[in-house]
Length: 108
Ligand SMILES: [Zn+2]
Image 1 (cartoon, rainbow, N blue to C red):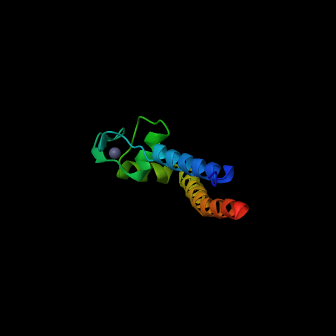
Image 2 (spheres, helix red, strand yellow):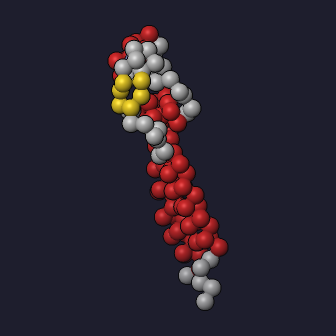
Image 3 (cartoon, rainbow, N blue to C red):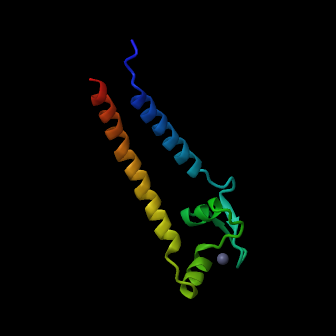
């Protein structure tokens, strides 16, 4: 019985795409640590340096150097983009059940 509508297939495909893109975003450096580009300390990767790594940066700074850098260059840009990314993810997960319910109602 062809009970599965195009909308359901589309919604499931969309959900799979969302999960895949989340998995891609979750990728992180192979190394657990990095050498600070300023003071040469070996430091553990933090969400901040992983974010920098994802955006293609090859020079990382330890927390102490980063705090010093922030004091001389106040810039909320990175945290702002991170927040909007989270909101987008939440919106996706809110939208998926609605899409599924809507398509289910469509053929009942
Ligand atoms: Zn440092």
